[in-house]
Amino acid sequence: MGWRRSMVMILGLVIGGSLPDEAAACSNYRTDSVFVGASIGLRYDADQAGTQALLEEAVAMWQGCHNYGLGFPEFLIGEAGTRTLRIEYLPEVAGDEKCGSFGQEQITIYGYQRLGDDLYSCGDLVQNLAHELGHALGLSEAGTAQRCQLHVMAWINPDNAFRRAVQPGECMAAGQRWLTFDELGAVQASRDLRVASLTVGR
Image (cartoon, rainbow, N blue to C red):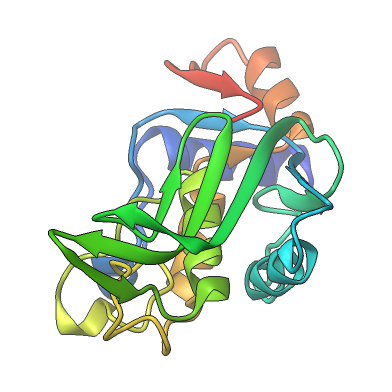
């Protein structure tokens, strides 16, 4: 990416470059930080049957983005990355009022969720993991409006878990606050441009 194009992109980030209204309504960022990184490593327990296949299918949903690995980091299955997360796959375990969770160092995927005394299936776990990977990219939950329900970042629930997919707006949003190392260098070299919050390797 050329220096001039990098500056245009970064200026768009800093001054709050926007997505189209439809995409912005369903593809939001959780923070105002600018993130830097080339890859997100996904480590997992090789003894847990089905984990690698689950990861491959969930990552493939993000690989369909035109800017995958360019505008935002690629996912490295079983390897370390600029940032590395541990994936815990628990298909026979019920999460308390949740089907998945994202933390700074770990993603957990449950097969069921417990609501009071009742257990409910978490539906398509590939889509649920792709949802949590979206959180790793910095995306928040999609809005609750009906127009957002096909987005992978839509709220995970049994009634919706079978039809979510990564949408173009989510691809755009994933790349909107990520900088490549080349772009970071351009920011650091510029005297006229400051980025208030850089989180490296997130």
